[in-house]
Image 1: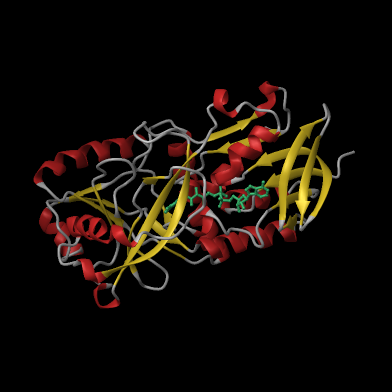
Image 2: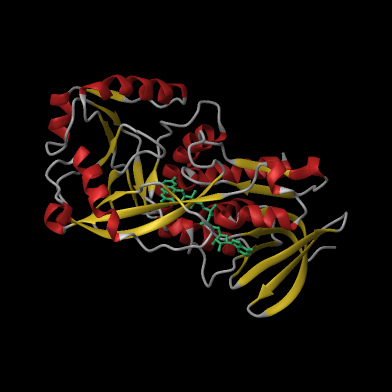
Amino acid sequence: MADFEITIIGAGVVGLAIAERLSVRHSHLLILEKNERYGMETSSRNSEVIHAGIYYKPGSLKARLCTEGRDLLYDLCKQYNITHRKITKLITATTENEVEQLERIASNAEQNGVHLKFLTKEETLKLEPNIRTFGALFSPLTGIVSVHHLMDFFAHSAQEHGAILHCRCEVLAIEYTGTMYNITVNDNGTITTLTSDIVINAAGLQSDIVAAMVGIDVDSAGYRLTYAKGSYFVVVPSKAKLITRLVYPVPQNEGLGVHALVDWGGRLKFGPDVEYLPDRTLNYAVDETKRHYFAESIRRILPSITDDDIEPDMSGIRPKLQRKGEPPKDFVIIHERERGLPGFVNLIGIESPGLTSSPAIARYVEQLLFG
Ligand SMILES: Cc1cc2nc3c(=O)[nH]c(=O)nc-3n(C[C@H](O)[C@H](O)[C@H](O)COP(=O)(O)OP(=O)(O)OC[C@H]3O[C@@H](n4cnc5c(N)ncnc54)[C@H](O)[C@@H]3O)c2cc1C
């Protein structure tokens, strides 16, 4: 008999959401996290937006899990008093030409079951008098959530159900014996091996490395990750009240475009940009030389912002399955039974909307494993 029925590798919001869901029916559940605490990587370095599900390809896992996750997340937040706000969002056309593109965005959203309202220039300015606009789309379902509060809820609830959360414990190797998985870990300086019937790889930025540990050729499987950094700048407090909801431009290149966010401290932030990194070093410093580029991007939305009104803030790193310039790829969430690895589930490329999707991802993983 294995030491644990289920081992989850990675205690970010996704691993924790899965642990919370599975711990209700499965008591021998272990979560392994290499850092000192849960949620110290991508899960605490994002925009904290509950996405409505507007941009994702209809039928994709991203579209499906985002819209399902959004509803599940609002329900959870209400039921357990998790800090959140349905702040709403505008996608503003900042030139006449972009007005046409709003239709394309609204039609994609509609296919995902998300209804957006067209607003004229005058209607938009009534909501947000300080922005540049030729008309906008209004998203009533977009919100923000305190990701720390959410992760606290998932972690505590899983532990109340008997799950064990073990931090400072890095998975180094995994071997399938034919009946169970041997997992070798560095447990706070001691190398040891434990066994598990089921392994769920929710290792975020390292999820391809963990997949390779069990013998999967990540290149031929299409699991190799590239890192794309997203930086934020914060606006000086005197201009923080220029907008009251999330305001996005029409997406131009990769990503959703540098957009306006309001954080839990009432600060107005802009970001994230998309910067593909040359290697896999986790360098979160925000490059001060981006100031002018950011100010220009922000002025597309808020013309009164000067270069001196903004300061470098924080950054996060996206685990991308697509290389620079390639079209977006879907989440990989797969039970690797067909590779001869029953009970091994990989979650790879869980970039945005991974936070929004987290409760739906948990439900999906439960279905993959237990039907
Ligand atoms: C800039 C940015 C903005 C974003 N904005 C949004 C947003 O507004 N809304 C939204 O829905 N999504 C957003 N996202 C996406 C969202 O943040 C992620 O999808 C989500 O946090 C992924 O969670 P995770 O648990 O998969 O990964 P992580 O949070 O990275 O957790 C993985 C964990 O695995 C651990 N781990 C790795 N390897 C090992 C190992 N060998 N042994 C033990 N532990 C290991 C790591 O230490 C880490 O704690 C954004 C992402 C970025 C980068």
